[in-house]
Length: 134
Image 1 (tube, rainbow, N blue to C red):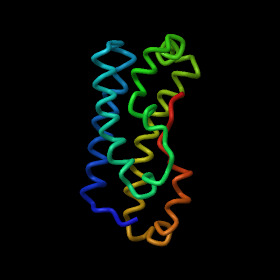
Image 2: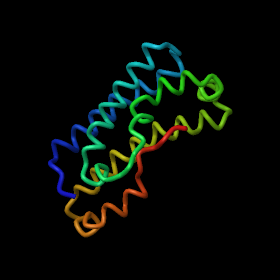
Image 3: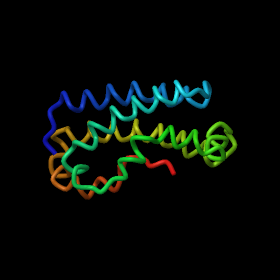
């Protein structure tokens, strides 16, 4: 996967903007916090979905681009995200952490040491898919 380093830097920058907004949402519990988190997430998705391997995948983009609105509209799931003892909380935190992993994986793939593995990146996407939240 031959990616310009500026694209990788931009993915990293956008992920780093998204993470704090997503972490604040369950604390602030406001529509404006959800809008900010979604805007930041959408900025990440726009770059990720433009990557060659993701362009060919049949992603549920409507779900991805409306994750937080859908979450807050589902009272049961929203309550779980706010409860540190629930599975929903664990899933939500895992989604956020997954973006760190994904961002790091993209950087690793750009390293010349991984050139052989890059040839088979479409198989590696199974290891680092965008985390869905259902």
